[in-house]
Length: 154
Image 1 (cartoon, helix red, strand yellow):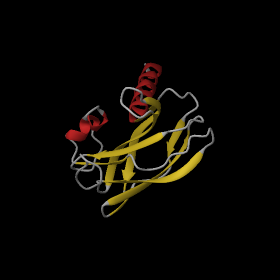
Image 2 (cartoon, one colour):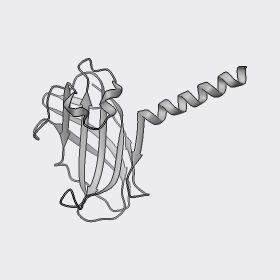
Image 3 (cartoon, one colour):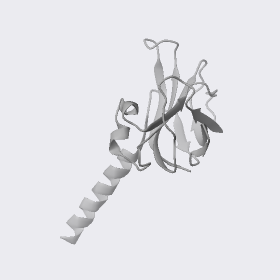
């Protein structure tokens, strides 16, 4: 009985960790690790990410942070299109990204400058999406890396 309980707990913990952070994309060598909390300073926030992507030209970055009204983690923010129902949603498409096969550690800024963003990030947690793509239109966009996870906001 005890072994069954331990096995069930192990499966439940592994499943919950998988739901908290995941990475996907077409570049099998691409990796990203969130290295810092999100640090809010007025209408801008920064976070540090260590990343790697294969050597490509024309790579683009999108970083997004969504938060519930309470600032607590909410599973609904992990769903596609949840920015509409979030209390705060900050992002950027303007940050430069270097895809040369090497690891890089960089600080990225997110804010409310781009259309559709809203609210004020506050202490708590935010669902962060860190995506690297190539292409110039929706039809020819290739997702190299998509890393998502809960990040502490301070």
